[in-house]
Image (cartoon, rainbow, N blue to C red; front, side, top):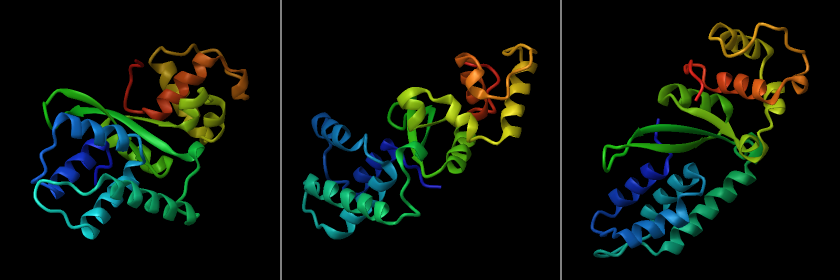
Amino acid sequence: MEDHTWDANYLKIKGYWPSVVFTDVLRNFYKKHLMLRNQWHLSEAIDIVKMKYVTFGTNPPEFKHFLEEYDKVAKDRQLNVGAYTTPSNKYWVDFEKPSPHTGVMSRYSTDAPDFKTASEIALKTNGRVRNQRTIDNENFITDLNNTPREKVAEAVKGLRDDGYLSKEELPSDFALWKLTTQGKVMHRIQNPKQKQLQ
């Protein structure tokens, strides 16, 4: 599976235009304007720029071409109802791995089109799944309500077995749970391989 992180896309740009010298200023400019965009769309836009625009010598393609192609890809995905995901249904995976440049452990984030794909990436990278609701307002109740009851029960049991939750019975309505309980259960659901909460 292709890596859709900023680092992977930056390496793709450097690989497609090897004669370009990416000074710190140029690298930071690209990072500032491209890193916060959807990396799946950006990866496709980089491929299109490589195919469409001829460059000479040590000059990269004009930066506007990356933005124009990115906007076209993003617009195409929005017009395709099956491919577009609203922010509340958009998922990311946060994980750590050694930096390809320095070898030092670094934090990464990659996006995924749905919860299932995000969960698969999280299992492979020992990462943490999050979505826009998690970023905006920690709305665990919505997430718990959208999670199958057996997964919630499994997470509660695991937390009790590990000593993170008391054995007292929890109400069936998630809104009546303490916020810390909601958070612990959602963390366990999103990170089933991690026993210790951080």
